[in-house]
Image (cartoon, rainbow, N blue to C red):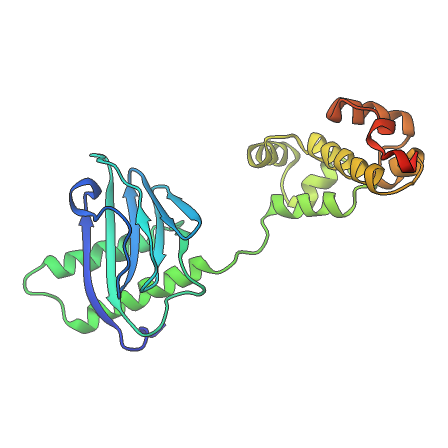
Length: 251
């Protein structure tokens, strides 16, 4: 990846935010990447608040208003890279990434070491490191294809009336049954069966409120089997009967 048009590096530093990082709202003419080595980092830009964990980075395009929400924290360290360029690094604006392989950290470290060393490395070395860093950041910022658990969640949502066994769902995720159940609960807070049941009941309640379908047909469409079972689950989740959920005009 070539460096952006009109590129000029301003600085790369490691800072203690309570001492060195500006507080309050900021708008500047340069682009900036903030990388959290360890500790905590939170900032606001527009209507969004961004919270970084160790190994996360955030990109602020030039002239983007943002406000670091930092307090004095001895255990926090940040890398800050600032540069001028005519092009944005990524579109459309502020972007966060997780440095899964540690490459951003390594490149920022070598950039900083190169600037501290005497004699300094040739400019071609620094520019190559920066090109690699920007390539890595833009790669991390690209939308990722749905993960294994997301694939299963989509499968369940699109085929609510189908009856899937745990083994079938695990195969869809390309995981063992044990590992699938553990990972699914970690990601969703529910077991696969509880997740499927909740989606069925939520869809059933939507049909009850918005259509005049008989309860038996609603149960069939969402895979709950019978009107009796539908009624039992609706009472469990909504504390009301299907008849109470249905608008009076449709009763």
